[in-house]
Image (cartoon, rainbow, N blue to C red; front, top):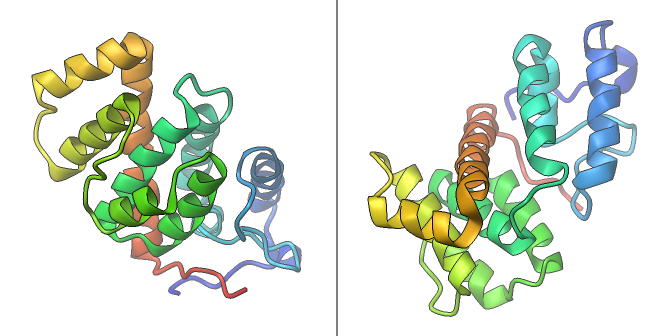
Length: 187
């Protein structure tokens, strides 16, 4: 890991309110995986975001906007996030979202296949649209028209936009995790 984890007693005046807001948001929406150390220090992408509040605070605001009251079904969100994490080989993201996806009912077989960078054969229609949408975007270039239309059909204009922003956010999360070599926590 390239950045030291900041213990709560070492946070500066700019970091303290951001850390408090992050802890509240983590408690609300990011449960089931290790993201806060025993001493209260933040792990995962939250630690790098805390290191640079000028950038971390806006990214956290977007994260909250995407996490709180989403319109997309949980399984659809997790498929898109895992496709993105698998593309970037972002270990912490995959660790965290496999756990979340299991809790949302995705099978171990589906998850293992997605994490391996492959498309499961047993995706629901909505999961398949999310997989294809995320896969096309992280591969680069313009989203194919048929993929966009399928997302509009399944999720409507707002849901298709939300899916795009979710994938973009998790590209940022993945790049953050990979830049700073954020490890999977030891249990």
